[in-house]
Image (cartoon, rainbow over all chains, first blue to last red; front, side, top):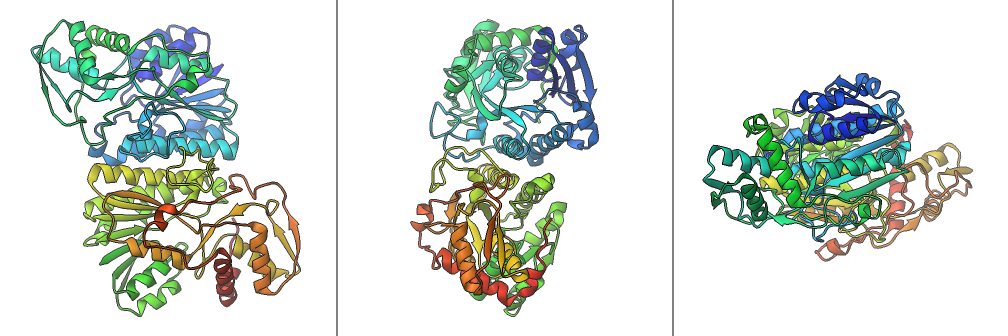
Length: 320
Length: 320
């Protein structure tokens, strides 16, 4: 099939691109390369089945529809994925996650693409009352601009599915780890330990409970269902366990062979809007053919290995 | 107190403006007069406590914050309120309901206004699984661009409340009827019956079940809680009954003294995205001091009376 992947040069996108071209799909990456990296696409380029379009989706307009023309599906992954620093630039989530998604929906409609896949987040549940949190959890109260913007985009996609007959699948991810990972707690800790292996500062009290998924498992779920959507559907995507930040710190330090002195920011969360307990009920996606191959510990260790092998990724970590 | 009312020249806005100045509040209306009507503010103008600022909130920028400076609260009512024709202009709900609300939030933050009130809608529940629908209904699937856009705006308001300490109250209205009403099924039917009292065409099969609230009751709920918000809160707002479209048709015809032949579009809904059963659980707001004074039938009859007394409102009804 012919698949468009927005944000295809990013972390999850580039892993999906590689998986799709290797199984024989024709893939067009649409990316503005603001955070995407051309080198993440090198393996896929070798297949001869990859086209790259450098476009800014926020600009909207007919050039997006032209890039989408003739596609069997659009996988819309382009986004601002920074949950932690949203309050420092309150318009970014609106623009990159809501307005861009609306532009993608209009282009999908104009180009008559029959199927859309969207990468949402467990953050749309805010601080969920029910844990593990199912897709039909109570109407959430948003606690981050990132979660609010992804929930907003989901809503527009559902309304387009209802109004225009678009087939659409929304995946609500836990945090994704693995090869190509460029931001989040693992890189923060690896960067600190690269600078000073003897000490590590941890936001919150380290007891925050989070769930993670290896990017290969994430990509397998999306790729496996591509082309099978019949209407509008939502799936949580994650493993069926969680860990604490302290667990993860232990695995990272073991993998790096360091024993730093730990200091803590204190409190039950790392920052305003940090959710102290994220754990999704994934029974719905598990009832399909998909199951994760990697544990959270596997995913953390594979991420550490990737970062050790790519010191320039760690070195280029920017803090707003 | 000093209150800003966006969309204050509109239907609900002008009723709220009048109620607030008459109890002694200082009110600034911010409106672009795209659908607002200066004559709706005439009674309030006489109080000497009303200021009017003609501004387009979609433009954003510091002039909004300047208009908000020194306010105790902003009641944000400005919106595209057209649920039925959303699919004809898919960007309007995004712009008027999401981007405008974000601009209002930024101005509230810049001007350090401590409290925000937002007019949302029962449409955010999509086609609810639980009826009457409580505020904590299951995570909704949006079925209209209007509902999607209001849910999106709610999410950003909640995230601002969490991130910036804003106090905010969201009201999810059923359809509002009464003096100043300018669009919806009552005016559609009155317009038809003005043209030809002998026949009436009804979208759907007339069995759609809907709930309505008189604008005076709506305004009393908002005015009564203004200044009392302590955090972020959501209230459904409506009466504790519903009627069918056919019930409403009967009341309208009785009030007008006509007996038209009825024809039906057929099907269980009037248009794509029409919700065949809207009925909100209002136990939460009823547990406060508020209770509605008017029944649905009262509200329909008061609306017919208003339209009969204001034939220019009926004559200016525009269909996209």
